[in-house]
Length: 513
Ligand code: MCA
Ligand code: AMP
Image (cartoon, rainbow, N blue to C red; front, side, top):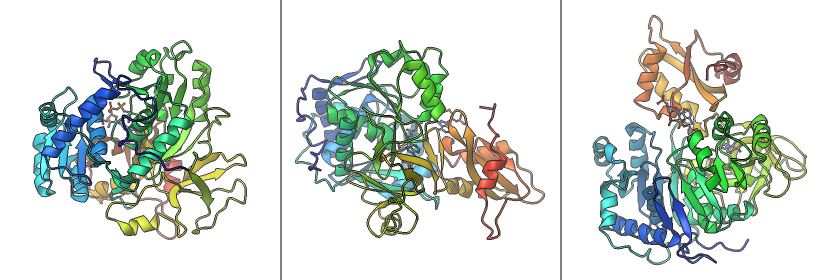
């Protein structure tokens, strides 16, 4: 593959890009052209420089989704700062860990969170705290408003320079910062824009959060790479999506978005008539949902497969067969192989063998922030990244994910690592031990579920345990149900048998969601 131009260094130089080309619009009436994207992000660059932010400095951001949040992201990338997005659902306890680990020069939070996050900046030695609201407000917004738009400066870096650190939990329960480079972001955006046939005439209806790879990189960077437009909604809401479909040409969502859209009688062929593409990812899309969507709208949802550490790996084709249940062939420049678990032992020759999927390509991250040991453990000796997903590749090169080797629950497109929840559960007074697992949930795909063993003679209610967890963990990680059991099922080695728990509680949410 030829080297890819840096997406952010050449923001306004892309072929065919004109300053008056629309970039972003909100239902509230905010509009940005590509010219004003450059101008307004330049004000955020100036504001951050006034707080001493230099290329390579981390900027941690926990703000509501808004036009200014997009401008701030673009500003960080243009000036070579390292963007560290934080889910707004994360509790101060979780945020403190991200700050201590990433050591940002600047933390930007919602105006209302300033009081509760200020003490953390002291604890984690973060030099500056500013705020950014969703309604053109906040101290950083004011600082930007009072600043002249600054140029990005010299090209921010080589393909290997760090662009973002995105935290992802792990099997040990401790979050790790995935280091994504400018080359990772640029190459993936260019490949996706081509694979999904984005043009300057496209409008992406954007309802995803801005603190994950899907809403941030797969969505916004692909739009930037094509010089296309965004219709930015503050969050996913099925009636709002239907209301705005006629103004858009592309939609990207997680399977829960599609299941919720299918519950709307207004989802019809006529509503979707102007759309050219619906894309799904982050979690498995059920073939039934795929089929029903096709019947209702005439559109075959295009499913793709990605990861925080690798950005997008595979995609069903734009032209050609979009196979329900498959995530499609590897994207151009990306290689995927099936390994049977021993480093370097490629099961590819044995057609359709199931094993762990391993990935190589310009999309694969540079490792975990300040954790070379963990990084080494996630790569094979011959340099492939171990995804922890189980899959097979058919004779036409299509990848199908059949399960996960990693202990992970995906709820509504959010990853929940059981170990992190178990650690907090075990710390609740009265709880002796716990096991967290996922079982089918018609809205979230999988529902986070816990089995707990209580200390003898102690009674703590499910509601009390949930209240204790909510102080520590983001709400989407909280088990939807906690069942009290006399003991956890274990194998002869003493290991908890989560399969047995998944089987025993498989119907827990049937009819209840
Ligand atoms: C919200 N809640 C959830 C979830 N979302 N519980 C479990 N799982 C969830 N995903 C809980 C809240 O904590 C709250 O609980 C209650 O539901 C209502 O919250 P609200 O914010 O109103 O929920 P919602 O608006 O209905 O959100 C559901 C959602 C959202 C729209 C599906 O979760 C979402 O936008 N998901 C997308 C996540 C995403 O972008 N993933 C990409 C990761 P309580 O009432 O108790 O407070 S990137 C990735 O995976 C890779 C790279 C890839 O391939 O893309
Ligand atoms: P994250 O760590 O949040 O980036 O989530 C990445 C994980 O989401 C992958 O390792 C897969 O397990 C899962 N995932 C993403 N896209 C898909 C998909 N289309 N089908 C099944 N699982 C997916």
